[in-house]
Image 1 (cartoon, rainbow, N blue to C red):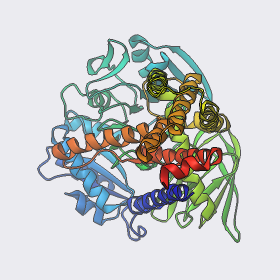
Image 2 (image 1 turned 180 degrees about the horizontal axis):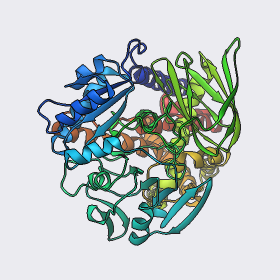
Image 3 (image 1 turned 180 degrees about the vertical axis):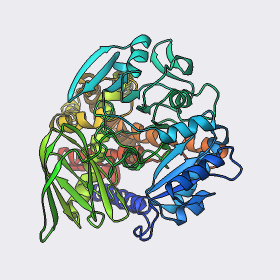
Length: 581
């Protein structure tokens, strides 16, 4: 059983190593004592510098000329005034590197436009509370949300253009680029298609739409046509977006929890294993909000022996932003009936997301409406520190097993293993029925583990998958074909294990048994590694983290542990022959 203890030791090492990295990446500087509420950033050489001076003078705000100087003020908000042509991949990468070194959470807004006058107009705009719109090409629908009621219409370019002119808040989730949103195969929404717009918020969960320095930029066109704000990605988002695409997480923003803070809460989720630095940015003023006051009432608050308890009433249905003054000293948050979160959580949490700004805490969570209670604690139980990341890792990998993996490669692989097993038996003139019952037990046990976990955690997996930024697969579903290929692959691998004498051959057959967890781990780590290698050569900075690979590796270790136990129970001599000859 020493092999099993080895797996457990590796798992613990991964958890605590990643925990330490996570703390280093998310801990901000101590407090914001003497901090400026808002700082203006603009280069003296920028053509829009006059506008930056105008804003600084009008609002009595400090004007700085480099990000390092701006960060010395320890601001809560930063407004970066810049002409589109002065932005670039290298400018954003340097900006990201500086933010990483500073480690403080700041609500950043980029003020720009195709002319200085249009940039000034962007600064002067205010959001209005009205109809919300979700454009989701994979579902071939436009979802309209108003007064907690949702309807849908057919997705086509005419309907999108017409709906944009009536909306206060628009979410797009699909394929995109600096020049377009892909609505249907061969049908794009491009810059020239954007009509005059009301002062709405646009949130684009698509690749590279924030590259406003390019000609025919769709994001720049949206701003020039009247939008008050545009949130999007400089590069491709391989991550989860909290409350998206139909929860409209910006809807209930208010002055103490404005849209810039929502962007930063989302960025915290993206940093939990997915992005190397937060390249999800806001074009527009980060202090904007849809509501004039908080959308619920605080009816009770008290301290107890374990922490602090706050009770609220009359909350609307949807993604609720909660601002807790002096809440940053509490590391653990629990919302009964919703979920819990920890300041230094390793992986993305589909129920509660949070950031600390100075001494205050900001939460986002999905609520069904009515009363809710928030419990704050300074410490997280040790058992939960260990169990939660393992469950998160299993959840993320199970979602990949069932919802996004193509079952055809699994079936082909399991069929190939069946042929190899038959060839192996024929070559050695063996009775294929030898060890078949034991092999089937191994296959059934692993398949029941995977399938049983998916069934028991189905609600959690569905909630997790709903938030995943994707262009296909409308909903999470337990795929029977994956379970069948899992059974066949594991049984064939186990049969080869029982019929092998070499230690190394047995180790290879164990990898066959737990396929595809190790393949997902390698793929999830290898692809970001390759992209980061190219990005470092071109931009001088990595783009993606390796959280998905770490989660898949943790799942692989758990499955190795399960398989080792099963093999040990079935026959001690096989384990001894394999690892202790």
